[in-house]
Amino acid sequence: DAVLRSRPAALGQGSVQLEGPARSEGSVQSEGDDAGARRVVHDAENGTTLPGPVVRREGDPAVADATVNQAYDGTGATWTMFKECFGRDSVDGAGLPLSSTVHYDHGYANAFWDGAQMVFGDGDGEIFGDFTRSIDVTGHELTHGVTQYTAGLVYEGQSGALNESLSDVFGSLAKQHHLGQTAAEADWLIGAELFRSGVAGVALRSMKAPGTAYNDPRLGQDPQPAHMSSYVETTEDNGGVHLNSGIPNHAFYLVATALAGYAYEAAGQIWYTTLTSGNLTSTATFTTFAEATQATAATLYGPTSPEATAVTTAWQSVGVLP
Ligand code: ASN
Ligand code: ZN
Image (cartoon, rainbow, N blue to C red; front, side, top):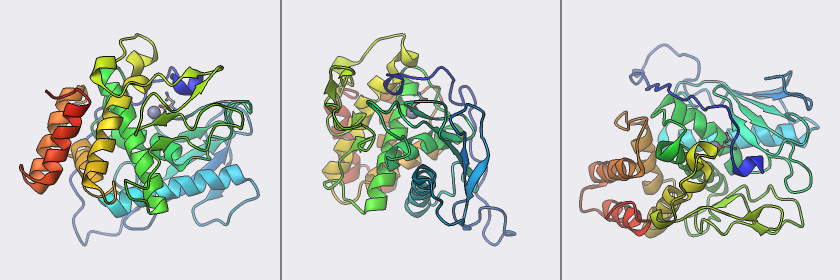
């Protein structure tokens, strides 16, 4: 169950890359300045050589291969969410071309960000189908790039689980923004389109109810905790980064639903500003991240605002803050 655990390669580990100063108004038009997404999709043709030949570039019409078009569209939905909600142009904030490779390997049941591009497998065909099918999975992988260029959260232990959680948060927001859903309307699932028929489960993960996304004889029960009392201490998967992410995932869900409306508005803004402000250390724990979101909410909305109150209540509910 590779997708539920991890792949060995590190994700920009140790590279704390902060964004440069904001570009000034009226500067010479440079690549990426409000020019829209700059997507390029490659096809590994079931091999493992990256990136592989280009099969669709920005502005090209749809091709015959639905997988290529899904990668293109999901990448576009994610770019648009970051731009329209947070004013961010691509993963580096400066129009970096968004590269993805589809049909990676044979029966590869996962997707990943390799530090420079997204990579998607076709799934094993029994449990998992094509990993380009879920916008939130594409958003998840692309957000690993955003985190790499901003807080650089080290992919291990609590900072690794925060890195994972931020990918789920902005992956889900990409889907919610694409569908125009409020927090109440959203499914809060990651990978709801990936399971083949016959699998006992609805998705890879649930932010609304971590630990309930699936329970299949071949996969076991979704092992994600939703509260610090069930925090998983393990040496597997860089310290259970895909498991313990359930705790901050659920905190975000609680903030978004307490505030109602669109999750990519106040809740998303608080999380985005915390991730990108330059104040978060790359080895942040759940507690330091929670305190950073409190400080962000107080700065953006006021210390006694409903937003600040919702943030504190959420982190208390998942056992991170006393
Ligand atoms: N899909 C997984 C992820 O992006 C693959 C990995 O890198 N562990 O977290
Ligand atoms: Zn991830």
